[in-house]
Length: 282
Image 1 (spheres, helix red, strand yellow):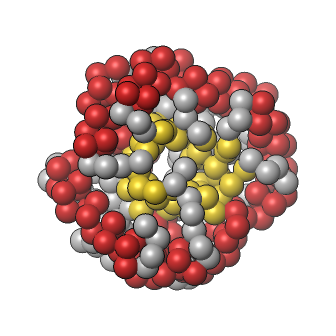
Image 2: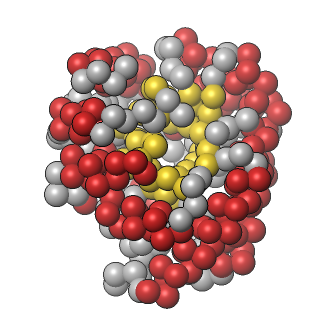
């Protein structure tokens, strides 16, 4: 997981054969190293078809998800582990290198309180077992810190590093996202510096989830901090253009955040690449 990639929400969040045939070749034409595939419905994904397209276009993939509401470590740990194992098997079948995202809970999971010790214990226990299954498949698992409105468990880099260190598995890493950090961190650089050796993946997402470079994210601070820690992981541009209603509702995306995917690819991607070059990351 190195270099620049893009979240396939630019094309579709329902990962069908049609979506794969649209997204993967276009991502390759833009010189991207990888795509991030959202596994909203892992059993429905045609893994062989996706793997063949990735091989044809000499690309790699990362998969991501949030757990179903009835399969959280905090309300049904056995079902959560079963779902994660199934998703990891599908991730491996596509030839992807990692499964990341809100793999420790669901998008929209909030109790109105800070996470309890019991909830944190449940997450650590399930993720430790999931990491063991992933290791058999030669996969890594990323824990993404997301904002307080989407989940109450891991909102900051510090919380996520603490969980990764508690789990203690070599194939578990920190996944940060500039959109969420812009809400939760006291300076995005602080979150990146706190994560250091645990940080292997970052979403480069603007403050409104639209075109990078058009919002309020402190991009020089982001790339300066990445350079300071010698970051070598994956940098995935994430801008939500094509969202099914259930995901749009969960993420509170009520209006268009960009004109179309071409605006994001033609304006946002060059902006991010130029910043990465400026700071010696590519």
